[in-house]
Length: 298
Image 1 (cartoon, helix red, strand yellow):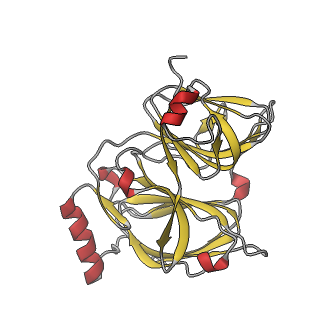
Image 2 (cartoon, helix red, strand yellow):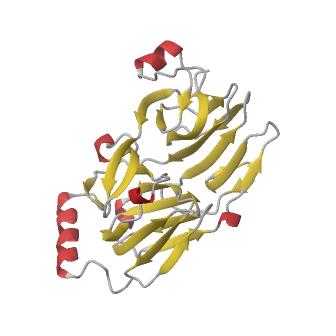
């Protein structure tokens, strides 16, 4: 069908070292600008080796972005320059808007078997909101709606809406949709996505066929060795269109489905700070060095 979104690009997550020595997998980031606008980065910190994550992310600044942390297992302790402290437990989400500036730390811990599973997504803020006061949306597992469709498809709605059911993260500039979707074997699911939005999926378990309208030959051109199946640790950026379709055969598939309205603004990015110009970026780092980064009005 003409309105179906196809796979336009594919990315396999790659190991990177961040924080005080945390090994994680990056699905996309700085080198993919501006393909994912309004999104900037997706990190996958699933690990069963505590040596890969226990050093954590010590005190560091953010300005001009939102960080969305989704924990599936284990937990993350956090603290910030505003005096906030807390825990992001299994099944929970922290949606942090850094706004004009916040300094914080995040320390991941595994479950009783030493395993942690989670993801952090960075979303850009429009220029008009980059210097607003920072804020949090701490979302408990029980606050995230869970839908079980008649065909067995299971969906957790962090943000966005399916039918009359809306996720708890609302009132955000880019109007994001963030779904955690699981399809059982031998199932097909079609989901509408507004044509103006940028959309991607990240497979986190099993394997599925995304948009059967893609020719197997096209998938080979995109270097999908397992065509027509898409497997764990693989991210798909979709073309323009109004819907996606996902199908399974003998195995289930679980994936994160994310979409948002592009900002179409210039991006000046250095480490944890993202602004619209080099001048704004330089000012942010100058303020961090001279101790005026965190605004008193915050």
